[in-house]
Image: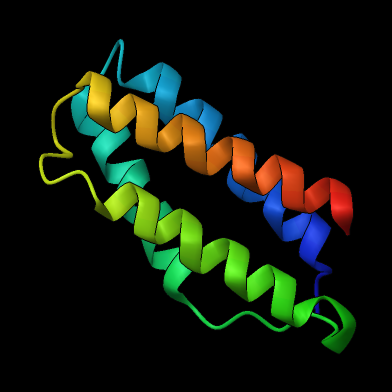
Length: 96
């Protein structure tokens, strides 16, 4: 069982990589984004004391990302959603 802060750190690092990759290799960035979305949607085993905040955070991040319809190509809307999700995860991570 990983703690929520560790998992959020992994998601944040992946989001940062995705944001950078959209500038160089959109296909690879899209594959990583699909992987991230699958991870965010999975039920993770975290300590009960962190569970509620972690689940709300991952749900909100996934919902924010999914508001963008076209995710295969870089757009300002997509980069904005990814950045917003990343910043929210950083904020929640600092609270844990």
